Image 1 (cartoon, rainbow, N blue to C red):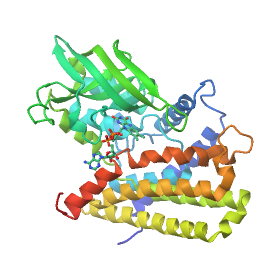
Image 2 (cartoon, rainbow, N blue to C red):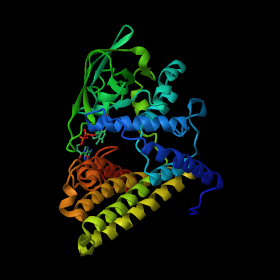
Image 3 (spheres, rainbow, N blue to C red):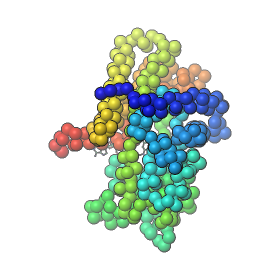
Image 4 (cartoon, protein in one colour):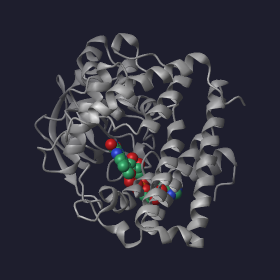
Amino acid sequence: MDFAYQAEDEAFGVELQAWLDTNLPDFNNQGEIGADHSDETRRTMARRQAWQQRLHAGGWAAINWPRSWGGREATTMQNVVYSEVMARAKTPGIYNANGIWQIGPMIMRWASPAQQQQWLPGIIDATDHWCQGFSEPEAGSDLANLRTLAIADGPDYVINGTKVWTSTAHLARWGLFLVRTDPTAIARGAKHEGITAIIVDMHTPGVQCRPIREITGEAMFCEVSFTAARVPVANRLGEEGDGWNVAMGTLTHERAGTGGIAIGLRAELDEMIAAAREHNPDALLAPDLRDRIARLYAQVELTRLLNARALSKVLKGERSFPEAQIAKLQWSHLSQALAELNIDLLGPLGILAKGGPEAINGGHAAHNYPWQRFTSIGAGTTEVQKNIIADRALKLPRP
Ligand SMILES: Cc1cc2nc3c(=O)[nH]c(=O)nc-3n(C[C@H](O)[C@H](O)[C@H](O)COP(=O)(O)OP(=O)(O)OC[C@H]3O[C@@H](n4cnc5c(N)ncnc54)[C@H](O)[C@@H]3O)c2cc1C
């Protein structure tokens, strides 16, 4: 395989890098954004909103969107270059990651021109924050078991039920939700039928968001309850009962640009070694820690090559299976292993949290250790990924 980029892809990266060279230092130097918010999640989101607005002004917020909506119609290779350049520059997160990568493309695919005009501009220019409400207490890995009920009543659906783990729902103005419009489907053994996708104004009476406190101390997720909430039928995406198709499009609208993951993991490893060298240098002499560093270094490199192989398949018009699933496992395993190594390399200093006078790098290690547990749950749990590989790649017999 040829690892070199074509001239036009190089040029795309150079243009992005030049834009970042001007805009990122300027953004980072403008003082603390969101300092007026009392909680960490709101401060983070204020910063993400400001960064996405800046990206949008430069035409770099939604590279895959059509030019008519402010995008760049980027190719697969440009996605890879984008992901790598952004990872190397360590850019802030964006306000509407879900909205730009998943919900926006679904609105383009399924919504009427009037609906597109209503919602797309606010997603890309970061005016409105969006959430995605799929999971329920009885429907996570088994998403089709969802039971939040929506019954048509004149111009509205009347919605009752509970969603859970809806990220940043309490900060969102809009949400893409999956609801059950045919209450008989589960009993009929046809749970994938009778599901409908609908866009909900989060300020609708009867919609209530209850933030859930996480092990990190922050509250990013919500339980969202619907109590006779009336949502216009006009907010439906696709036809009634078509929600499973809409959702699968949303979940599988895959970012081709996973090349940045290995760059981010490598940067994390380099930074923890640098921090250990400065604050706890004896740790770098311990044989078991040296062994873990070397193994993780090799695994990160392996992940980079795995992503390259997946990309090569995509460019040839093939599916990136099972590389995409294996890369997901690698990402969650390495994120957690690196977080554990960081604590061990810093010794007692590693557990000092943000705010303390002696916390290293803003208490990053202490925060990152519990936070990275999410990587083996979100975007498909480890067990479910392994089941897919066992069933479809290895073709193992079912127990
Ligand atoms: C950071 C983060 C952000 C999220 N944001 C959102 C969001 O914005 N919107 C949203 O709708 N949801 C969101 N989720 C929820 C996420 O989609 C679910 O947590 C995920 O689908 C798993 O579902 P569950 O939590 O109900 O676990 P369950 O599906 O109940 O699984 C529990 C355990 O059982 C295992 N298991 C389940 N089925 C099988 C099987 N068939 N074989 C073997 N083992 C199995 C799982 O691997 C897991 O270990 C988020 C989750 C995380 C971690």
